[in-house]
Length: 168
Image (cartoon, rainbow, N blue to C red; front, top):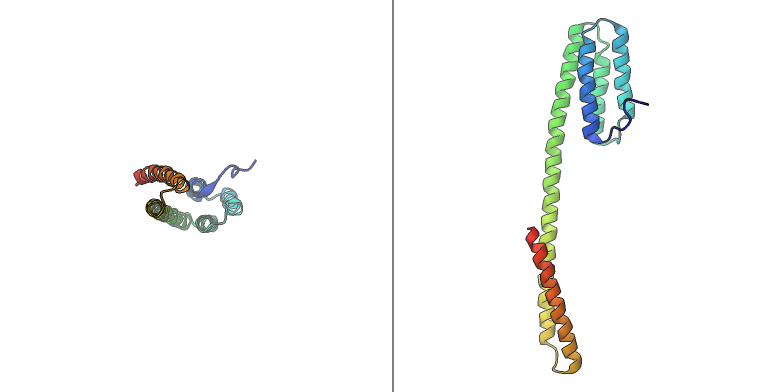
């Protein structure tokens, strides 16, 4: 079983990378190469396992890649400086992803609003067309049946339009 099993979405992969960056920062303060190599390999595994390959995930992979190579620098100071830079980069990306998500939600809400307005307008047009048709009917039994159906249809469309209009 891999430490990456069950991780899904940008939020899950971002949280995993954030915890790995914290671990990497602690390991970078040690001179022992073996621990740094192991962490570097885990970060490389992160790159291989993270999915799907959306722009957001690929950006997280870049941070993991840079951190993996930073762990192998000669001095503790260089390692810490590089990992701190990667952590800052991760924070910037997190902020950027949040802004993008908010923009996408606003766009989706706008599309939904436009569709609601379009539906209400279409219902109004259908009601008006039905009423015009009713006016053109003659005073015979067949047309009276059609007029009755038009009235029932108009009532149903008005109820629908009212319910949809309340969503606004």
